[in-house]
Length: 283
Image 1 (tube, rainbow, N blue to C red):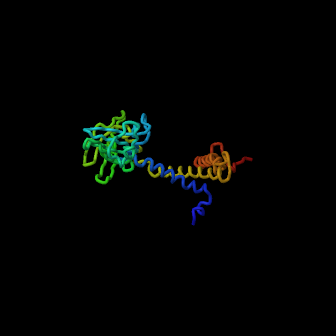
Image 2: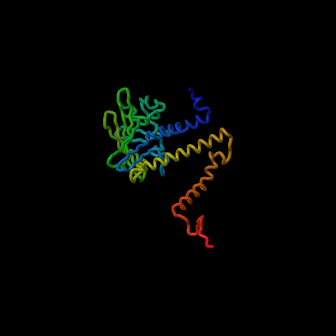
Image 3: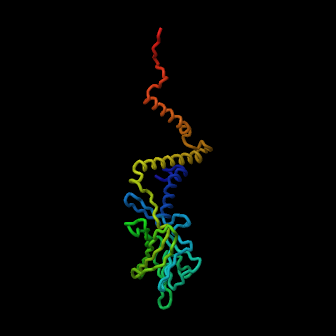
């Protein structure tokens, strides 16, 4: 059986594929820079690229990179994206895995330069695609999260850990740099994007009833949009008549009102001024 036999017209195929396409795009754009953590009936959500006040790009540096230099070692990195250099680009002898000598630093998310023999030799530390996140302190989720990226080279396996400390007062760039292994570095920044958003802080969340209501509303929305699209493109209907089963929805308020009044009369019994069908008559 072919796809054409299952979906006889192009519109039905598009309506089936649209949710899958949008879900794939949304997940690929946001999954690498999000972390959710549940503790004591509270759901903490970290979204590093979400726009916040004074920081429309979230954790992303508006310069295109963060930079820290300690004791002759220089480190460049960008979180959730590759680096961009409009000024002060790295000048390294070896930059093959991070853009090459002409675009040094623009092919990875973290790069370190060490002076060897009087020349800066660069080593790639990681890419945005290899980044994962974890809490700085599991006992205190509000403290912030750590971004860890890695790179497997031909000689060394390198990595960079950036602790993103929650700070609602503003941004403090990296000031310290530690070498915690042969080719493993660690640094720290303060940023409002490191602060968690508490999505559900009471009870056990929405529960089964809330989940069921959301599913019903989503199905109802799909029904309205799908029906309207079918009537518009396939049947050529225009105006308010593109709403499927318009007569039913227009009469629904009156139907509900009649049902409500009928139930009220049933539970309250006959009203004070109600006359029975059979009334006593005096002759």
